[in-house]
Image (cartoon, helix red, strand yellow):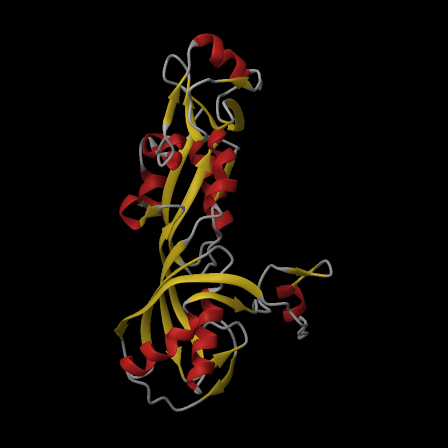
Length: 289
């Protein structure tokens, strides 16, 4: 059965779950998940985890992401992007230098109020369900981090491209909305392309049509241990490998504390594990039972 990570360049107008459903059919594997949802409007890097590799999704979803976002000044919509209904229009007289200066308060650790058109639940109801009924409810701000935010290009008198590297939970369309508000003319997002997620980049991604037409799409999979390449490797003898396979913690004298990629005697990737005070404990196993 196929196991590994497939980096998809998601096309516009597809949901992330649409991509997973299509890949389940072409790969013949039911266990498929993705790291980091992209709205249908967005394109770009969508890491898809296949087979036993789905156990790594929880780690990949936590990482920072990078986007190239289209900011349209002078327009405010109910969805905070151009798929929504226009609520306000204003004249725009903003230079790239003025926009760059306006970005400074949005860098670093900030708070962001999630948009009404989002899947966040308030009192058991998804916000977008309430928004579609014309309701707006108070949303508590969330702590996010904008690691970097720059003006990449001015496309027209109202349109700019911004590059943002940010933490999990950041709504880039809300960022565009808030920047427009700070400038006094309003703003909305007209495009979004994710250029990095879970440490994977566009250079490593495959356009979805290429994958669907490939004679052997499973050959495009990256081994799941590649995601943990920043951790040192630990290769075990057969008797220790058996303990890992049985879920048993055991002493490993002389091994420094920290997280490790653990391999069996034949080189099979077994687990992400942690050594603490000389004892090896499994964080997550990746071998087939």
